[in-house]
Image (cartoon, rainbow, N blue to C red; front, side, top):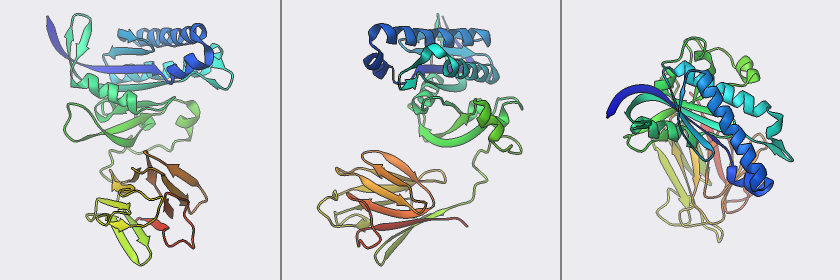
Length: 303
């Protein structure tokens, strides 16, 4: 018989387990993954949670409160990051954790619903060593946890219209002590000031954001917003779009996009994306140069 209830759903899995099997061999990798799963199970139960199921290197669990879920997630990360048995030549095993508080349907020993997909999406967004969660979870955290939560992104989730905010929960002691306290806890992003991005190619200049353009495309095809001709440049090479107060460069090309920031950082993106900050130059298919007519200059403008 099914039963509707609200709960905190948590997913935790081992990052790069396929690579572990290649590096460590089947026997050792299975031992390492098994130890991680045991730790995740133990910390779930220690925090008063319930393990719903384990699938390979992944654990799905539920908790009555957001605090309990975060306590379990933090202990999982702490124990696994400090466990000497989980180290190997050239690295250390890491996990990622995602959580969401919402309604689920319980049937026998399993749970179903959009909230489960939401929690799973948070896990897929997380990097090694991260704990990611949603506003629904963050808003239910106690005062002790609130200063350790910050919004870092937005994401789309199957079954949801629009985007959902993604929050990171800091669990490492050095991160927690170095993070300045925010009055009232995490920032929902509503108070952020509007920003703009200026792009310049030769005498052509475009502005994104603040009620203006939300996206710009660049490439050698004539229907792009900025047309750049060159043998290494794809017809639709790259686009830049505004996404919740940040500008994201999305490469769609064969030869990739090069970014040289004003601070000296060099970034290469191919069939991937990266945020733009500060100012610098963009090169399509090849590294940009100050003397090149194909270099695109960008600058983030804050009011």
